[in-house]
Image (cartoon, rainbow, N blue to C red; front, side, top):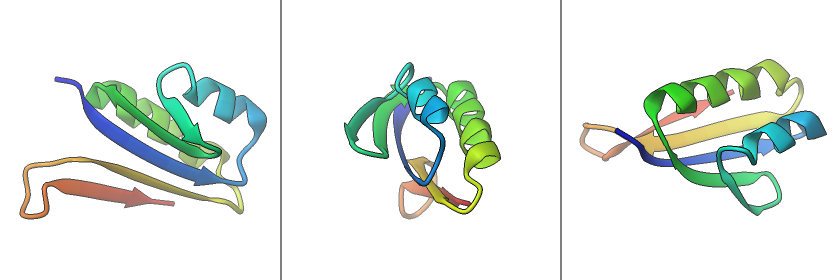
Amino acid sequence: MASMTVLAITAVPDHLRGALTRWLLEVTPELYVGTVSARVRDELWASATACVGKGTAVLAYPSDNEQGFELRTA
């Protein structure tokens, strides 16, 4: 089932930003929001962390826990 995903990245190559816009909406520079499946979310996260270098990446998505979401950071 698809769920809302938020991905914030900094200092990544333009090719990654372009790839992310195929799946997510870039609401402000380097902040992406969209509704994707868990498989797509995990693939996007793998791509982001592979290119992050000295930048940062934060992923937030819904989860069945007390807060209702999970965070991943790189």
